Length: 250
Image (cartoon, rainbow, N blue to C red; front, side, top):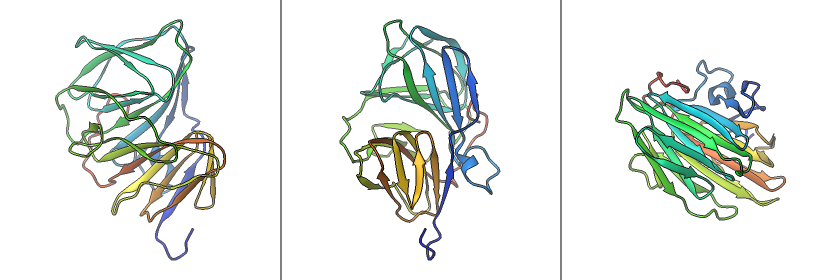
């Protein structure tokens, strides 16, 4: 860490908060827990980042959400979504889904018997206002380019292909062993990142698979892959107005 910089990098190990429902298992990452002086499990509008596992032939039956934006990021495999609006959607490495639950949205998720085992992230964003109109976005995304950030969602009006209703940007990158890249940064915003696969070093700190970092008051920090690494990052306005009544994220 540069002693002249106000930047702070807070590391968290793999979360110990998990639920095992047999064919469906989750590990809940709370970005606010990275910061030792933070009294909120979320960090501003980013409530929770859930690592989800679904075995083949698994059904999560129809259930409701309210007042949260739920993003499904599937780097490999497939997640099948049905809802009461009649949508039948498949989210995979070529598509991203954002479900704005708003005043209420019912959906179910499943994998088929011949689908591969699924490991994905479900990202819960706190919207800026309660009981917004329910929405769903399901869009193709650009092919990844090795060692370059891919911008996947952002606030409404940003240049990202999908949007959420608060001040969070989301990026992913596949880094080759030995490659380096600067974490996304913006004046007044903070950065949370999560190592989905591989291992990396940031600011002389080692981050293994499923470990996360929170960069506060950030100047540019460079991440270097120790092996081939898949990394996601969130650029967050910590002072954005938020709601706290989501079904899961809160």
